[in-house]
Image (spheres, one colour):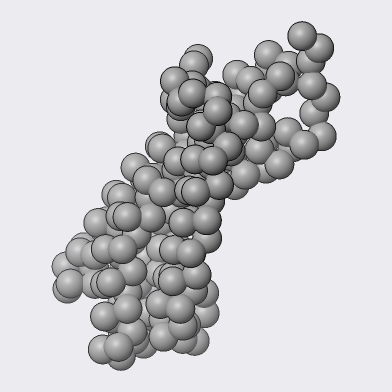
Length: 177
């Protein structure tokens, strides 16, 4: 399978990666700020607790623990995350593409799959956020927290696998060629 960004010219790959990495880190910092009012005893990990609530009872408990400022921060964060999704997907996918340069075929194939996985993770993130948005806006559906939790778990799994694989590229010997 071909990497989703294989068509990006070689000279542009590194500068694009650094650009999207810096933007990712800046947006991540904004999320850390937004997450502060969401950290309550019912949601000790802020938005991540909400993403992984798993049940309507847990999600409602978290929502009930948030004041108006926290609910506004959650709403803004869920919307702002739609900007973050393509940014982190591009940063991770480009990082995997750079890590795969001159590496064995098995690693090239694996990084190609995970390059696609970064965009799949963003898709699951979008579904997750929509479910969380509905809950935040008063939708009472027992299906929404498990949907959000499953999507969040898949998202985190793909992103962590991509990060670990890209980092592992530092230790995988280059092929001669």
